[in-house]
Amino acid sequence: MRRILATAAIVLLLAGCGGNDKGDEAASGTVLEVQQQGDPLVFTLNTEPQNGLNGAVITVAAKDLEGAKPEDVVRGDSVKVWTQVCTQSIPAQCQATSVEVLDK
Image (cartoon, rainbow, N blue to C red; front, side, top):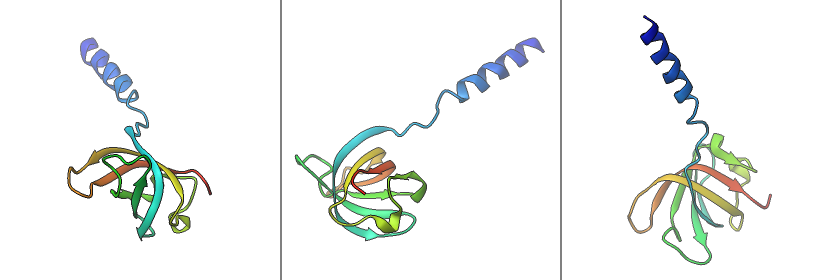
């Protein structure tokens, strides 16, 4: 019984270690075009200097958007994008774990 309780305690402690992982910061750039305002927000990213995510279609849930509401994001806004999953298509399509709007 003690072993079961000890194992359960360790599992609970480790479960809390994951925290709020945004993933890797994938890119910084500007909003080239807003394709869908609302939840989710969908926009095209313009990176400078250009990288593999230049022209990528970024999808982000409203709860994962920092610094602005989805309806306030417009072409030309500076953003940082964190992702965990992107397709290797052209253009790339990414599910963002977080997007920070820098200049609102």
